[in-house]
Image (cartoon, rainbow, N blue to C red; front, side):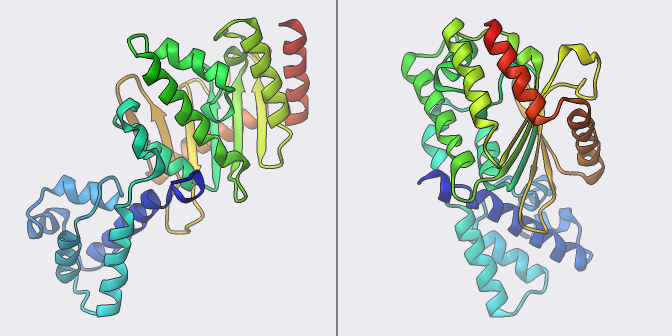
Length: 287
């Protein structure tokens, strides 16, 4: 599967999950009772409603019966949605070199129409050159074989096709100056990366800003994060936070609002995209 047709399964899971949640709540049925009806736990229902797990047709049928959905057409459309939601994305073939939580993120990223991010440790994965990505991955996978490292880099390059696709998402990224000064690879790798950032920041769907050291403390004090927004009106924004051994996906409105406020503040406090390009050119001359 190519990048263009890859991401629908995650969004379909989320759409089906939110639809099932609305049906359950409309009938005043608890998650516990819903779980009992499909021989599963309350937390399984919660994961289904958040679109975090695949759906068994029998479970969906039983839940629809419990929620009083008797119209054949409505049942059929939701069951076919469940079937489509179980189709593996293109990144499935990389699952042997991915942390367990990451395929979900790749699917969400591919489904988003707006990606907003703050990065501090290194250049964002969607903006990395192949040489820089190789240096980052090799550093992070010290025990990885050459083949595993190459495969992880290939995945990163595949993800970048989103940015230049016909229906590419809007990508707004604030890079901390620390990410630009921390060397990954040799001098040539870093020069190539800086030049790539200057070039890609000219794309109409990319808004790249640099938060300079000179600004001092700022609203990104909690570290890197990404906010994903989807074209489907009934899907809430999701905040993605990567940790050492896991990742968090936040979709509660009040949590998301705090990260969106922090990001707006970062964008406000950082030099404009044009000024940030000048800053990048200055760093390139120094390197």
